Image (cartoon, rainbow, N blue to C red; front, top):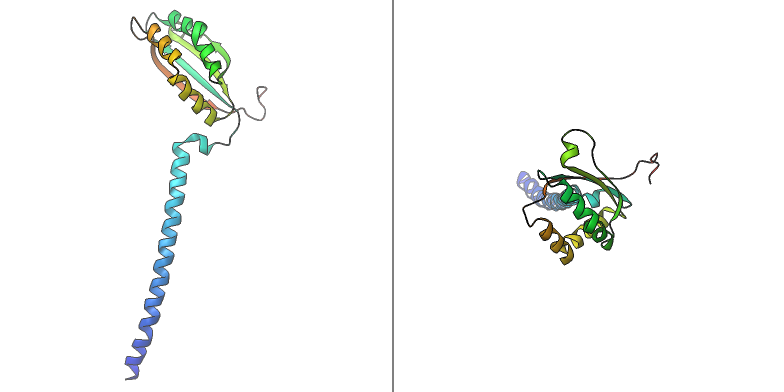
Amino acid sequence: MKSNQSAKSEIPFTIGATDKIAKRLRANAFLAASFALVLATALLNPSMAQEEGKVFELRTYTATPGNLDNLHARFRDHTTRIFRKHGMEVVAYWAPTDGEDAENKLVYVLEHKSRAAADASWQAFIADPEWADVAAASNANGPILAGIEKIFMKATDYSPLQ
């Protein structure tokens, strides 16, 4: 009989302990899932992963064959002004000097107050009816742009440009 009482006294303890362990496991699983969600969001959204502050955007445009002059004209006559309208500051434009790049590339750098500001400016720029008209007119005889490469950067602590 004593052994039965022993078994009975262990059962409530085991059930209670199991409930506590289960609650801890659920809480830990919730925390792990929350952390994973925040981490995934930060990795997929660089503006969250990066400290807020000024960022520079390096963009390289490749024109379709024979359209580099048309691309330069679009930037000279329209794009730069529309950039300013949406808070995008042009640092400089460059034309490569060597090889095929000299025939089809435009390189430029924009300055933004933050990555979030850059994202907002690009969204506003793309939605701008004036930009839609300019893009449609410049592409009336076929696309003038074959590709875009971009990278966001922040100045190093030793950079002359801050």
